[in-house]
Amino acid sequence: MVLIRLDLNTILLFAESVIFLGWVRIQLLYHPFSKIAPSLGRYMAETDIELRVENRIALLNIRNAIQIMSKYTFWESKCLVRAIAAMKMLERRRIGSTLYLGTGKDDSGKMIAHAWLRSGSLYITGAEEMHRFTITGKFGKVI
Image (cartoon, rainbow, N blue to C red; front, side, top):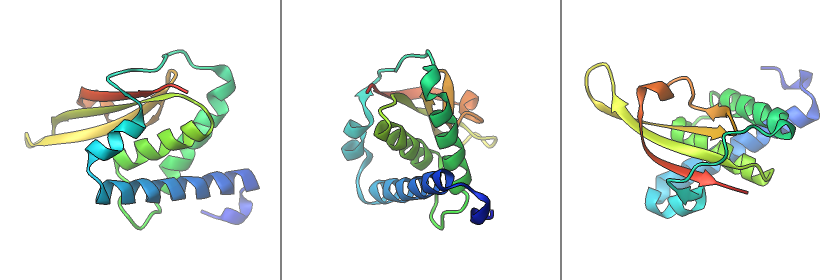
Protein backbone atom coordinates (compact mmCIF):
# COMPACT_ATOMS: atom_id res chain seq x y z
CA MET A 1 0.00 0.00 0.00
CA VAL A 2 1.39 3.37 -0.97
CA LEU A 3 0.20 6.06 1.44
CA ILE A 4 1.52 8.91 -0.71
CA ARG A 5 -1.20 8.22 -3.30
CA LEU A 6 -4.00 8.52 -0.76
CA ASP A 7 -5.82 11.72 0.11
CA LEU A 8 -5.47 13.19 3.61
CA ASN A 9 -8.95 12.09 4.74
CA THR A 10 -8.19 8.47 3.85
CA ILE A 11 -4.84 8.58 5.64
CA LEU A 12 -6.52 10.02 8.74
CA LEU A 13 -9.27 7.37 8.60
CA PHE A 14 -6.64 4.62 8.33
CA ALA A 15 -4.77 6.10 11.30
CA GLU A 16 -8.00 6.30 13.32
CA SER A 17 -8.79 2.67 12.53
CA VAL A 18 -5.33 1.51 13.66
CA ILE A 19 -5.69 3.47 16.90
CA PHE A 20 -9.10 1.94 17.63
CA LEU A 21 -7.95 -1.56 16.63
CA GLY A 22 -5.03 -1.25 19.07
CA TRP A 23 -7.11 0.28 21.85
CA VAL A 24 -9.75 -2.44 21.59
CA ARG A 25 -7.13 -5.20 21.49
CA ILE A 26 -5.55 -3.86 24.70
CA GLN A 27 -8.97 -3.59 26.37
CA LEU A 28 -9.81 -7.19 25.48
CA LEU A 29 -6.43 -8.44 26.68
CA TYR A 30 -6.54 -6.76 30.08
CA HIS A 31 -10.24 -6.59 30.95
CA PRO A 32 -12.90 -9.29 31.12
CA PHE A 33 -15.61 -8.96 28.49
CA SER A 34 -18.15 -8.35 31.25
CA LYS A 35 -16.43 -5.01 31.98
CA ILE A 36 -16.37 -4.01 28.30
CA ALA A 37 -19.92 -5.13 27.44
CA PRO A 38 -21.79 -2.17 29.04
CA SER A 39 -20.00 0.24 26.66
CA LEU A 40 -21.28 -1.68 23.64
CA GLY A 41 -24.91 -0.66 24.00
CA ARG A 42 -28.11 -2.29 25.19
CA TYR A 43 -27.85 -6.05 25.53
CA MET A 44 -30.11 -8.06 23.17
CA ALA A 45 -31.27 -4.88 21.45
CA GLU A 46 -30.94 -4.07 17.77
CA THR A 47 -30.73 -0.81 15.91
CA ASP A 48 -32.97 0.07 12.98
CA ILE A 49 -32.40 -1.97 9.81
CA GLU A 50 -33.11 1.03 7.59
CA LEU A 51 -29.97 2.58 6.14
CA ARG A 52 -29.79 6.34 6.42
CA VAL A 53 -28.57 7.57 3.04
CA GLU A 54 -26.49 10.36 4.59
CA ASN A 55 -24.44 7.74 6.49
CA ARG A 56 -23.70 5.44 3.55
CA ILE A 57 -20.34 6.94 2.54
CA ALA A 58 -19.06 7.04 6.13
CA LEU A 59 -20.14 3.42 6.67
CA LEU A 60 -18.40 2.22 3.52
CA ASN A 61 -15.24 4.18 4.34
CA ILE A 62 -15.08 2.79 7.88
CA ARG A 63 -15.73 -0.74 6.63
CA ASN A 64 -12.87 -0.42 4.13
CA ALA A 65 -10.48 1.18 6.63
CA ILE A 66 -11.05 -1.54 9.24
CA GLN A 67 -10.79 -4.30 6.65
CA ILE A 68 -7.55 -2.96 5.18
CA MET A 69 -5.76 -1.84 8.33
CA SER A 70 -6.58 -4.96 10.38
CA LYS A 71 -4.31 -6.85 7.97
CA TYR A 72 -1.37 -4.60 8.82
CA THR A 73 -1.49 -4.52 12.61
CA PHE A 74 1.33 -6.39 14.35
CA TRP A 75 -1.22 -7.64 16.92
CA GLU A 76 -4.17 -9.91 16.26
CA SER A 77 -7.14 -7.96 14.94
CA LYS A 78 -9.71 -10.72 14.78
CA CYS A 79 -13.45 -10.37 14.39
CA LEU A 80 -14.32 -9.06 17.86
CA VAL A 81 -11.56 -6.46 17.77
CA ARG A 82 -12.65 -5.32 14.29
CA ALA A 83 -16.33 -5.18 15.24
CA ILE A 84 -15.80 -3.14 18.42
CA ALA A 85 -13.27 -0.82 16.74
CA ALA A 86 -15.72 -0.12 13.91
CA MET A 87 -18.53 0.40 16.44
CA LYS A 88 -16.44 2.99 18.28
CA MET A 89 -15.59 4.76 15.01
CA LEU A 90 -19.29 4.91 14.16
CA GLU A 91 -20.09 6.13 17.66
CA ARG A 92 -17.69 9.07 17.15
CA ARG A 93 -19.75 10.01 14.08
CA ARG A 94 -23.03 9.59 15.97
CA ILE A 95 -24.06 6.59 13.86
CA GLY A 96 -25.82 3.70 15.59
CA SER A 97 -24.90 0.06 15.09
CA THR A 98 -25.56 -3.46 16.33
CA LEU A 99 -22.76 -5.81 17.34
CA TYR A 100 -23.62 -9.51 17.05
CA LEU A 101 -21.93 -12.40 18.83
CA GLY A 102 -22.44 -15.92 17.57
CA THR A 103 -21.24 -19.48 18.03
CA GLY A 104 -20.94 -22.37 15.64
CA LYS A 105 -18.77 -25.36 14.84
CA ASP A 106 -15.78 -25.59 12.58
CA ASP A 107 -15.22 -28.40 10.08
CA SER A 108 -13.84 -30.68 12.79
CA GLY A 109 -16.85 -30.08 15.07
CA LYS A 110 -15.01 -27.79 17.48
CA MET A 111 -17.04 -24.89 18.97
CA ILE A 112 -15.99 -21.51 17.55
CA ALA A 113 -17.20 -17.92 18.00
CA HIS A 114 -17.61 -14.95 15.69
CA ALA A 115 -18.53 -11.27 15.96
CA TRP A 116 -19.90 -8.95 13.32
CA LEU A 117 -21.24 -5.42 13.10
CA ARG A 118 -24.24 -3.97 11.26
CA SER A 119 -25.36 -0.38 10.81
CA GLY A 120 -28.65 0.09 9.03
CA SER A 121 -28.80 -2.60 6.37
CA LEU A 122 -25.04 -2.55 5.79
CA TYR A 123 -22.68 -5.04 7.44
CA ILE A 124 -19.48 -3.29 8.44
CA THR A 125 -17.42 -6.25 9.69
CA GLY A 126 -17.68 -10.03 9.74
CA ALA A 127 -20.40 -10.47 7.11
CA GLU A 128 -18.46 -13.01 5.08
CA GLU A 129 -18.76 -15.67 7.82
CA MET A 130 -21.84 -14.68 9.82
CA HIS A 131 -24.11 -17.19 8.08
CA ARG A 132 -22.18 -20.04 9.78
CA PHE A 133 -23.07 -18.84 13.29
CA THR A 134 -26.08 -18.78 15.56
CA ILE A 135 -26.57 -15.45 17.31
CA THR A 136 -25.99 -15.81 21.05
CA GLY A 137 -25.87 -12.15 21.96
CA LYS A 138 -26.20 -8.69 20.49
CA PHE A 139 -25.63 -5.12 21.58
CA GLY A 140 -27.54 -2.25 20.04
CA LYS A 141 -25.89 1.16 20.21
CA VAL A 142 -28.48 3.82 19.42
CA ILE A 143 -27.06 7.31 19.11
